[in-house]
Length: 367
Length: 122
Picture (cartoon, rainbow over the protein chains, first blue to last red):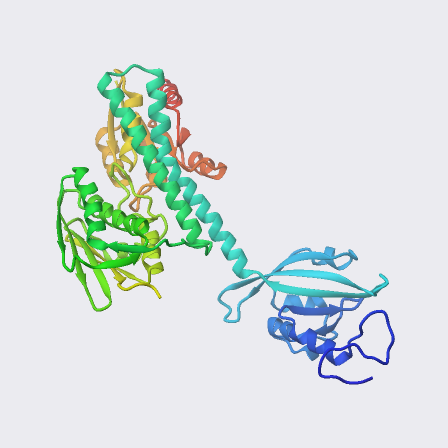
């Protein structure tokens, strides 16, 4: 038979199907990324590929004639349904755990075993097993489940107010003043709930890799900042806002709504975490190829530990005694938005003194 | 006059519970975390405690409950756990820590009031 470097059907053998010569098949097996092991009808290993050698830390020559049990028991932490799998004559899946190479972690593998049959369908008595590493997928699943759990929990708090006060209003009598107060809380918490849901969707998009589609436009950054500050001033939270913007002619190619969202988030943190009122300062300066905005408060500040968690999902530095809690998602989303603009965000804080959040956005149109 | 202590780190929940339980037969007070709750339990000897589980600080609601149950002078104090954690496992650990009732948030004020009344009659 002609030996060929490329996989071509051999012309000397007339057949209805293409035949590949043994060397090529061996190369194929050696190249399969998943660990592949073939056992005979007595569960003795007759073949193991390179990936199997790596996975089981056993040379394929040593593997041959070992029983499958022996090979797996050498390393595996747990195997499910191995017996069931062996004698069924059908394709079976099973789960397996192996320690990682440094022995400190666990790898999760999914195994598939299939009986080897001739093209005509006759069983040849052997079984081929593939081992696929699903550690990453399992970890993702776990994170997703955890996220759903935390999200559901976050929704409970505003719902407690809404459900509770609405039932009270329906079933009891209250003075007009109290009726109005309770309705205000219900409304406020409904808005908070809306914000949580919007943030959750944002985070979901970010984490699934879909991200945001930025719709950029040339924006006068000083005007945008002014707009946002005006809204906050109208809230009359007991804070004074000082604006010190240099280079006010600077325009940035940014997604106006998203950057507004970031500014609102940073400012509402400043308000929330300086409960005694005080001055919130917004400074803006053009730097070499960027514009830097710094928002400072003289509030309660953060400890180094709190700072370390600032971008964690659902993390709130202070959960207690705030009329409207944040969602704990804002900074994570803010960072994502800024980085999507090729900018940077930085937080400096001192416990008991105050906090400054700086965002840097590049100037110049995106090429 | 029965003394009721309300423990929850969320201001809105404390207020909701206070309005729900407003009555001539109850004297209501509140605490914002486990540490403050323990202090007030010792100062005021409430007849019943409405206790949130998840609160910031080292002492959460279950820790307060366990401490309470290990102190014989408080054995007649009734405890209603009020929590967002509502899985079977959570209820089980609440009751085995010594709770007399477990109410899951979001809750019905009517049901809470009925439960409190029931426990204070005993």
